[in-house]
Length: 160
Image 1: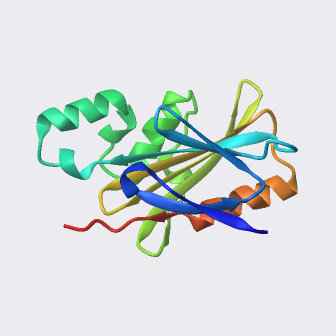
Image 2: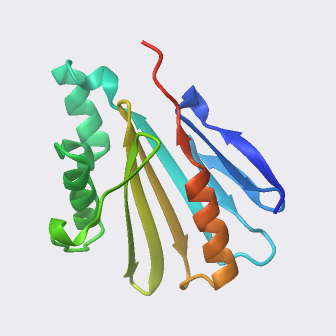
């Protein structure tokens, strides 16, 4: 599969996605999709939480915009995010993985008949939320491509 690289606004992360796919940005959030035979779209939101760590006003503003940032740990953030989607989950049912210094939690679920795969990632004060949203569960080929895109994500190291 031939891919092309995408670098996020603010250089928070980059990833590889298929050359046959399209990318559109809405409200600073990139969406990746197969315009011909695709079932859904992968959207990725990146938030730099580092500037708000020692500034209560910035922290309050960020939590207002992204309520899941109120969670202390990554797993807490994911539980809050899922609760916002009306998904009640025991934190013990979520598994945290690590790869190249990035911690991430994946979770699949359905809401009102739509399929979702959410992956929350964190590294160096950058929180990334990737959501694949589709009318139904993707076929094996699309699921494999989404998996490859997610595996290619690299959160950029912070230069202090």
